[in-house]
Image (tube, rainbow over the protein chains, first blue to last red):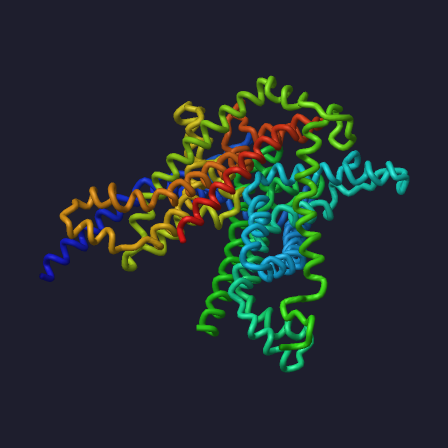
Amino acid sequence: MAELSNTISQRAARNRWLLLTPALIILIFAASGPLLITLFYSFLTPGDYGGVEWEFSTDAWFGVLMQRDIFDDTLGWSDAHLSILWRSVKLSVLTTIACLFFGFPTAYFIATRPKKQREFWMLLIIIPFWTNLLIRTFAILELIRNEGTINSVLMGLGIIDEPIQMLFTEFSIILGMVYVYLPLMVLPIYASLERLDFRLVEAGYDLYATRFNVLRRVILPLVKPGVIAGSILVLVPSLGAYVTPRVMGGGNQLMLGNLIELQFGQGRNWPLGAALSITLLAIVMVALLAYVRAAGNEEVKHG
Amino acid sequence: MAKRGFDIRKLRGFSGIAMTCFVMLYMPIVLLVVYSFNAGTSIAIWEGFSWRWYVSAWDNEMVQEATVRSLIIALSAAAIATTAAVLAALATTRNRKFRGQTAIFALIHQPLMVPEIVTAVALLIFFATIKVATGYTGLMYLIIAHSAFCIPFAYLPIRARLQGMDLSLEQAAADLYATPFQVFRRVTLPQLWPGILAGAMLAFVISLDDVVITEFVKSAGQDTLPTYMLGQLRRVVTPEINAISTVLLMISVLMVIAYTLLSRTKR
């Protein structure tokens, strides 16, 4: 009997790996494998015309945060890279906060509609979510560029004489990122709010809590997992954003994604580009791990 | 009852912010669509209705080629990713925990967790080496790259569908001496079909919309519609871009609605 069940489970295991093969081959060939190669490349020497020389070097990793002085060859902090790194983190955090400010009330609004209407409101959030990111960035670009809709209308009304420069600033990058990533905040918060038991809210009011206190002491603690999930879902793509800062920031407001691209274009420093990519990946992984831990703690508390 | 007119669900200012959100989400898109019908060359000053930019986009050879290329890549990638995802979902759903399961899940979901720009750079490095070694610079690189990042999008709805399915039907079929393949073909597959279709559509839309990975992987002269548009944004923008965007937008909207309807029949 034991033998029989053994052969069955062996066969099941073989079938399982057989079924998994196509997906694994594709993913290893075009996702995980190249990532390992990138890690490897970050320890090589840059070639003169892009590409790499097969010579071990840790220069690329020094280059992530440091630079050699061109005159006396001393090591110092790389101000350019530090400021780009700082901008990436700053703009991503501000984007997340702004998405939270707009996303939470929107999710709350949808969750408190009558059941039949909710699907319609959610569809309004999901449609932009599945719409081309470039097209949405382009749509907001048309709105705020100097010859764009807002400036044309204001000038037509005679409120301003010259267009307001909104594009190619840090503000325009944040605006663009909030616009494209907002649905990612609304979806998980809504999922939490939908399960919220409003009898608890009622109990809070019965005990003479103010609206603010009910929000702070009853609603927010209960939907915290959704809020954390939404924040991570916005923060992670913001950190790695490439299209939005490129389109909304012009050439001078670089974020980490654009700095990486630069190394494979004009910079011709593939190892540095590889090292920067791995750095970005590490930052994102730290954010994701923090999320997993926070989510795990929540489950333990409520389970 | 509590005080009359006291709504426990109401929080002051929330509805206002929500409405602002919906207006902000849709106003730019609506304007984009409206100006695709502009008779003038401006994307901000209305000069009357016309189809001229749709005609001009249709006649633009670059756009034609990019459209055909986008469709070839998206259809191939969706087909490959969905097939791989169905098999992977069958292997990883409805069974006990097995050795290596966590690693498999991490691998399948990797494209969702790793920033696109990192994947793009990694593929650029890897494929550049292969291109030099083999001399082949065709579309296969893009198709494989797209297939890889489409796999999780196809996998998730299929797996969700599979998990919601009733095992007893398959057991009944097996009791009636159906071979495992017959069970799959006659019982599992018909029930799984909406999930497969939903997954394939998601994969198709995701592939059609991709900018970053395509931009880094493509060889010279291999623009897809999104990378063509990204290139055009550097120049003077005419409503032709709006017209192309509007068409892509319509495809996405139709797909989302179809997807919503498909995943609803589950319950």
